[in-house]
Figure 1 (spheres, rainbow, N blue to C red):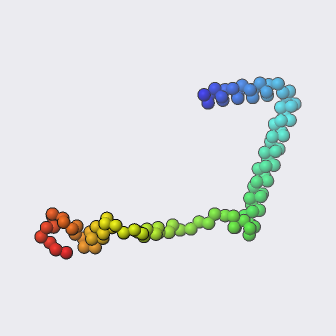
Figure 2 (tube, rainbow, N blue to C red):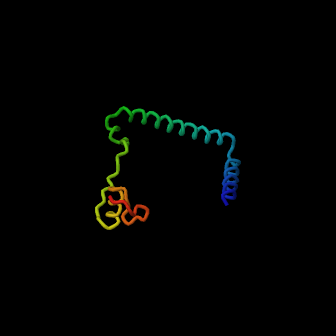
Figure 3 (cartoon, helix red, strand yellow):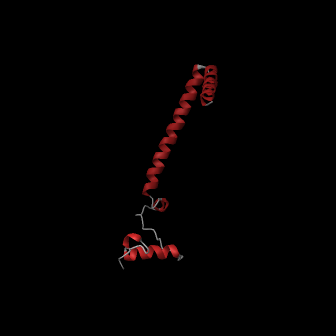
Length: 103
């Protein structure tokens, strides 16, 4: 489908440019060349000018270091208590492998 669309656009452009006289083609090409050149120079100069302005500093994106996430647990439930027991003592309650040990 994209191929067909590309072929149709190519065919339309060739027909349109084929109708132009050589002088008209030269005028279209020179007009496009001058307008694109002007836009390129304008964008380059305006971006260099904006780099030196103090107001442009406010528009820049601030880059900062990655901060640690605040992962506080707000709710307490039985799963939290189980994890606390495991990691506080290193022994899981009711663990059959550690049947004779006490924490």
